Length: 316
Image (cartoon, rainbow, N blue to C red; front, side, top):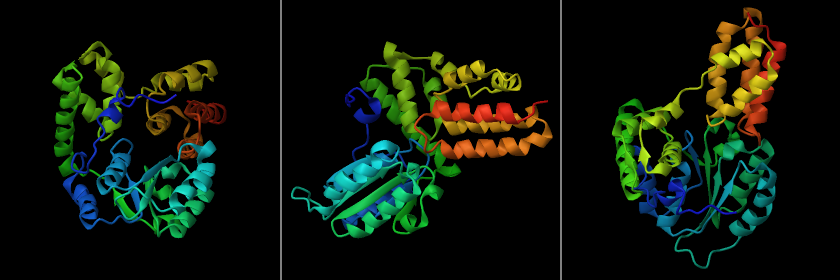
């Protein structure tokens, strides 16, 4: 089943050009320079989720008239086959319709791919350089192997402190325009709070607003859904080895980013565990936080982490 792109706001209102993207001007200038020269290098776009890395990659291809092919690195089951077959076929042929010099393959969430897959991608970058460019997006560039990393122009989507207010204000304006087009009334203070809570994850802001705006209005009720992950109850369940309630707590909090959940748990464990078992708990959290970038089921991964802590660590 395919999603209706006219229904999903993040697709319906996805920027079509670099100038439409909400990013610091210094970052937009880098991409506009590529447009002016009419030439794209292989690129690694690194930054937090939802900031617009994939949008920028698609906008570049559209503005330069380049044929593009998008592969999601999180689709572990089919990814290797896709790279070896469809992507190879796409990259090895010359486009008859494109206005640009090259085709482009966009590897989304490349940091979710394995070491072996990244070695294959590196080989493809070299093999098809004449016909094709590669744009990789990732949340964590340290998970990209050096041989692939070094063959790309790396662009970090980082918003520094001085830029945050300007960028947030730009998105606040864009969000109000979208809500007006969708005939949704909204409390301006609530919108500002949502943006502040999820900054700079614009995708999540739009998704949260669309989900809550089904009734045609966004009010303070939305704020109740933005409460930070509360681990107080979880700590009680873990100390009692109450597996059913541990699982229930995880299911209830799955809307949150897994790394945020694990970070909050990490902070809470210091006050709940006996000092001698804290080092082991830290290693457990680190292991499962790393795995969260690769696993197919976040619920199982989080539950496995909590089970190990519950069984191996001593609570006060």
